Length: 484
Ligand code: NAD
Image (cartoon, rainbow, N blue to C red; front, side, top):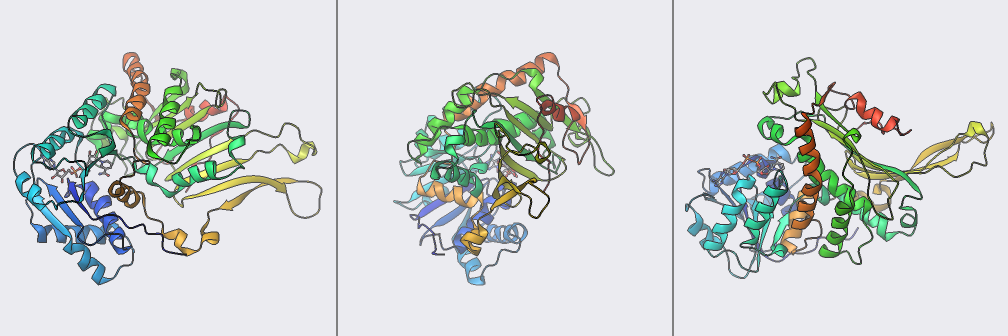
């Protein structure tokens, strides 16, 4: 396959929080892979900036170790590692004080794209934006990248948006949701809008329901304090699951361009009905063997925060009225598995015997593991014995058709960081989208708090509380199995 690396302009990328966990696990290894792919232009600089005391040499050792730990068996040449390290620098900077800012400003090169990745807690977004402005680093070539959580409710999200808007235009702000950088998520748009086959069926007349599952096997993993203040609704549904729902449910944008796509996503969020409390199931994982319960993990025996949630949603618009969307996400579940399943209706009439059964097509978009797309179609079971029908997946994993290069797609962070440098906001959330998602989420959480709602316990390694299964059973439907 022909190389599809699109060159980017020379840039300076500053990673605030460059010594933190996210930088170590995701951002810096992703940048190295882009370097190896030949996508770093001559003169690019990557500058770690954080409170920790370090110099360039120590930062280079830190990054080398991060790459060794988090890039698995990614093959690279020694000269690539040497080349990459030579474009790395480090400056000790205090986001809340004056330390390091003059030095950082002096390090910036003229006439370059400047990207500032705020890989720090949201309380530092405003102070960082302000200091970038004060120290003369905020010009029209400047882009800032912010991580989740973008607020914990509508009010705090508005406040964050305001603190960024004081110094930057919306077109300079890149709010990351790494789910949008996944290859399959973009493929979902290609499948929907690049084919005639699916879009005419993509509505309540032909789609029985849609289910979105994001299941994790890990618990709160040392993030107990943060997680217990957030819970699955804030940590996963308000952002990642909501973004997936938008891409599945949105109208075709007129062009694959940032605002055209984001306008359509916003309309989906605004069309969401308030959720009936009876259509929500919350859970907390129990202990199992050596593994602690949720309450032990977060060291809060009274916690009423959910580590699992399942909800049934409705959209009030012409396309989707009558088609429910079932969403669920949780920790310590049976398998690490994320997928979207579009379950089509049964055929209106069967010409086959009763024994042949009634069948339906399911389009499954797998996000992890093994990103790919399956379409279950009904065929005749081979061999004699009459017309027996069976559902088989039509393999749309693409690796055979596209060759081995299809397996080496960049990961979400690689793609998204390069999009920042290119100035392409299509796969980033706009401020009004984030606010609309909080405006929908807030009353749901407020209702739990008002009623003192308590999550139901569920077994580690299960699919969540039994009531979550009942949420679909009572509608004559069932969740797809959680499996890797
Ligand atoms: P972390 O605590 O590991 O790192 C924080 C970084 O910020 C460190 O480099 C620290 O030196 C720097 N820092 C703190 N105070 C500072 C100050 N006053 N001035 C300058 N630098 C300062 O945090 P993390 O896990 O890397 O997370 C960073 C952000 O990314 C958070 O908002 C988090 O919610 C978000 N996030 C993290 C992950 C993850 O997997 N770790 C995933 C998604 C989102």
